[in-house]
Length: 119
Image (spheres, rainbow, N blue to C red):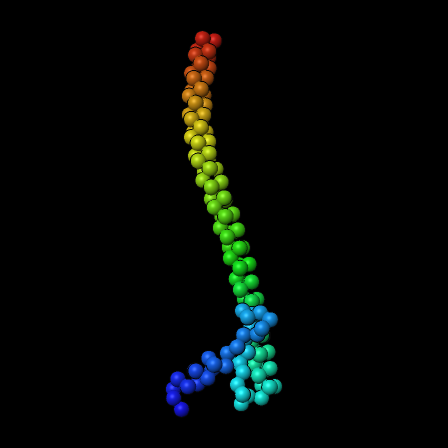
């Protein structure tokens, strides 16, 4: 028996079902009993169903990942905008605190002058 003979027998035995040539395939061999061929067909049908479910799950997960990435991009943009607004607000706060200290110093000097004038 040639090394390529089992492969060629396998390839010769591959036939697609007439209902949907792309959905499933069966192995037929004149020496294989019909019950065993049906069992092989069932095995391939079960395998096909598992592959279809895996593909559907993969599509679902890819869609979820795409949605999550879009949400992450949107949130990152919002974070960047708010970070710049925060930096601007912090700058304004520091300026107002400095101005308050200056006003406080002036008020204290004026209070001292009033005390000196009143005494």
